[in-house]
Amino acid sequence: MPTKGVKVIAQNRRARHDYFVLETWEAGIELKGTEVKSIRLGKCNLKDSYGAVKNGELFVYGMHISPYEKGSYFNTDPMRPKRLLMHKSEIRKCQQQVMQQGLALIPLSVYLKDGRMKLELALCKGKKLYDKRDDMAKRDAKRDIDRMMRAKG
Picture 1 (cartoon, rainbow, N blue to C red):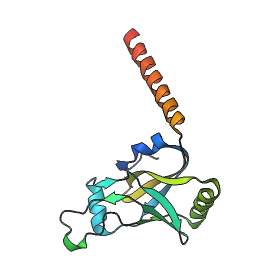
Picture 2 (tube, rainbow, N blue to C red):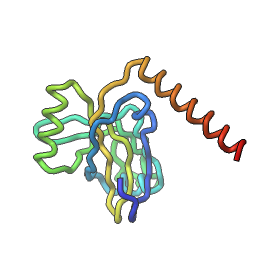
Picture 3 (cartoon, one colour):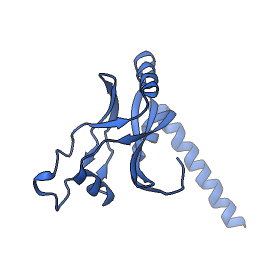
Picture 4 (cartoon, rainbow, N blue to C red):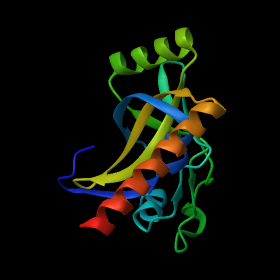
């Protein structure tokens, strides 16, 4: 993800714990006005969200955007499916890989890039329990090594 003009709003930290990330894409999000204001305030949650292709269009389901406090009747359903904006060839590629290989489309983060809301979408393969344990063991070992290096230096 590029860093110039980027402000990260929400991240799905659980995704990298539960899945192997194989490929990532950047997609625009089709939002209503009060949803944009709510996201700018940081009221977005990607927990348990996933992407799916329906009728040749890419949607993200389970993404919760809290209602904007000053939005009154303009507020929409916080859990409504949001359409993602990507090139048709990229959408087809996502759909083929999900159908053939049994992979999942998982949103990793929502960010503001040069004034536009973007979503980082990843093609993921689920981790087994022993993979998660292996990752935790590696992370603990690296932490111990870093701690020892700081103590010596």
